[in-house]
Image (cartoon, rainbow, N blue to C red; front, side, top):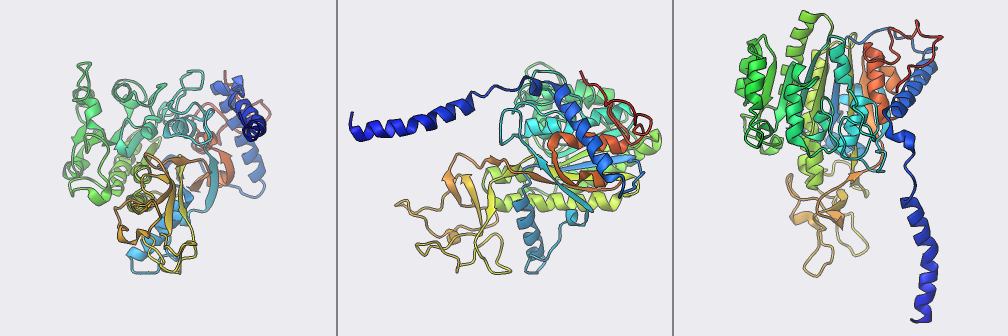
Length: 482
């Protein structure tokens, strides 16, 4: 062994020891418990209420709550989509405006899981639906395996109509967080069974999305879950296309729409038979308004633009940004169809992605293209949008970076720095936008698991502190969660 190599080993020992110490950090036992996160969120809720009551006197209760989620909707994605929106309309782009930019209150959400700095869509769904942070890959359960009920379940307990709308499979992690309880997000056949057979899934008034195979052909247990739904909803309406969905408008029963065997197609690749997210959102709001008139208690609906995330995973930024603009259109639809005096609208993301917008491109440069004057130290142009990790590095046969100009198109791969099998999530905070009753509470930086408690407070649902019980319990201790 050479002396130089020995010195190298000696130099590495402190670094390795520090790395091992970090890996071997003991998971705090309390973080495995639902009660820890529920109590933490209630404390933070009360602090927000106390901090704002002296200068914002909002006494309105939210009869209805609409939660819109852009899966993988990073802040860079918001900016790039805004520019694309403006450029599609003939402008330079930067001056355009997304629907959420007209919301009066904006905050940031911290997305980590109890075991990962950068989260997946399962642990985040458990946080923003159930108010509990958990392990990556876990849906509707705490780190110790306790059942975690979602804010949608709270809404049903309060007599509200409920719905779930997504462009992914209905059994994918994000929508599953509304109704399912599994330790592994990949148990989609079990998630489908829970949707149709257990509460709160079987009591949903509107179910729209993809993933038909999980309810029929892919099953090995002999269950025909679609037939079961029909038997349980004799006045219900089942649709498989936009035409059939529109024909359900006169139905007095519940709605089930499954528009693909797996995820719904990207909007850029979809046939005219597939409904757009904004069209599904409109149908959902109409149906839930109808149910609300019947029950008098309002509604809660979750609407997800789920394929923003998939475009980023494929590092096809054109797909991701187009899906974001489809999501933007759905937000516009919801705002147009609801009344901010009685409806709380919350728009957020579950996690971020590694998309960056870098360099000094001139104003009006096509956001899916490049400013040819922007070059690296070797004189090679680079695109405005890039990923940190992804499939394609824009290299020539000798492994040298080359200009991506010949391959840039709305559906092509976008360059990335590190070669990976796919694009990956990133761990920075994501945006939260709110409009309607108690929307001022959504400002500032917050833990992601605070979100359902804020919605519960505004709508007077759930077992925690709410607008309706805060005065009565002003001198009482915070709710105890065991």
